[in-house]
Length: 356
Image (cartoon, rainbow, N blue to C red; front, side, top):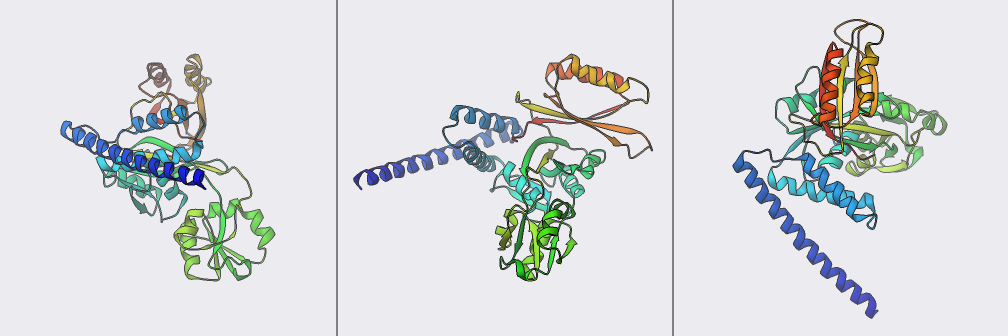
């Protein structure tokens, strides 16, 4: 017992030191914000924040559990950021969607969030500067690219400023936690499609109905005891629902990639990714010439896909992700060559790589 009490007193002392350090960090962040405002500089530096996180994770060398350390550091960084300049962030709502989870993961709990009804509304809020940033889904590991998000870049003057990956796990939720109370299952079409086999096997006679979002389904289940929702763990907590069954998705390892969009892209960090749209003429070797510019400089392409151009039938645009920042000399030289081979080249943004 004496040893136990001694260790507990040591923890109490460490907790007081942690609190003192956190208060000191918050005060320094506030003073930095004052200096930036006085000098007319941008208060938010996503590149600096991601570099701080990367450095601390490296110095930890795996001693403290990495996922937990990442969450703690991000929350500290995000809270201190609010001391410099409170930011509003729009996301595809309502509350407790996977987009909301992505926004919390990237910006922290202390941020002011604005749920909106559609992906285009997120772009509208960012372009009009009613919010500082927006969070939109861009790609799912099973369903593929989110067309609405990519198409929106042709309509709005925004850039990609960051990315975050969110594992998609679907839970069946209702008021009681009992399967026998379920008369109808509601969810977003994608969620229903990803749980089709489980529903057919476990609830074959129960009606299934599509709604606009997983969170809307959860809200419906919260007021109707005969309804169950397929939704996120966050939705269960938000709407005070019970879990009937966990992880009912047909394919494990489902992940959605979200983009952080804003008006000003971040500076290089050394661990960046660049996204582009381009089109080439309809002739042999046109696409090869573009890809060769990357290959000759050993610039890795992490994604490339073709998409129909909306303005002209049977013409295609290519969406491409590559490693590096547009300000890196090698990538800058590459894109200058690429532009000579393209009918159209659009830079969507350069941003710190997300953590998979």
